[in-house]
Image 1 (cartoon, rainbow, N blue to C red):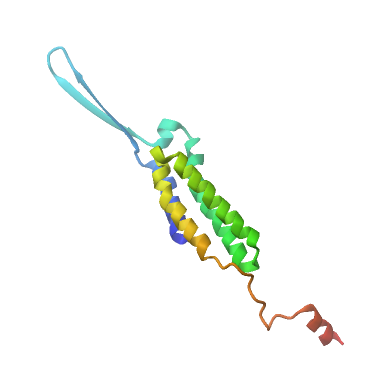
Image 2 (cartoon, one colour; image 1 turned 90 degrees about the vertical axis):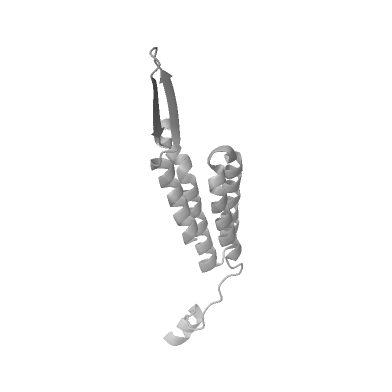
Length: 142
């Protein structure tokens, strides 16, 4: 799960700060001199701040899967596992729909989260013998 969180964080920062768009132009003047110029821009510079929402969805997905897997491990609620799988499925659909742009970079994250969901225990934790129950507290008070 830690690798998935690091990958999603790197995905967000690379998308926000790395130059992902580049352009090159050439111009020839009337006297035959050719000038070349190139420029680069980040996703935020080209698409605006709203692209940060799309770039943050994988990190949000990692957080939701982590919370639901931890809830499932700690409390044994199977609904938490279903939520984790739904989030992984939705992230997979997003990856497929965006395959021609950023989707290919989300696929490793989908695989990592699916592995984390598959490794989560399916049963509720067994209560420890040292934990006092209500009946044992009543017996001590008498």
